[in-house]
Image (cartoon, rainbow, N blue to C red):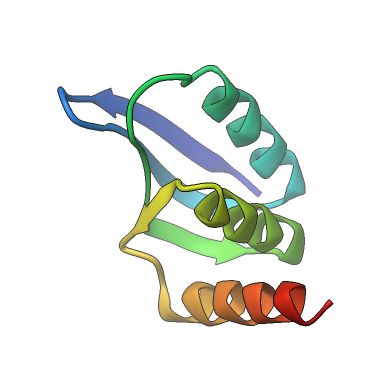
Length: 91
């Protein structure tokens, strides 16, 4: 599985555009990159993401809960994120 991560910044946001398949290893790498972004609004653009495994989906749900904006999210990933968040609130 491969994932390409490109970073763009503007005055009001830092955008990480993701392309390819995302798994646990890629989620860990992305988490490291996000940890270095202390200031500014961060957005993850999933327009070109083709596959997401469960660990990556859990990371995305946690990131969104922490205030990271997710755009161009494939429908199946969005459904998974919603289900994950609902499961967390029931615990």
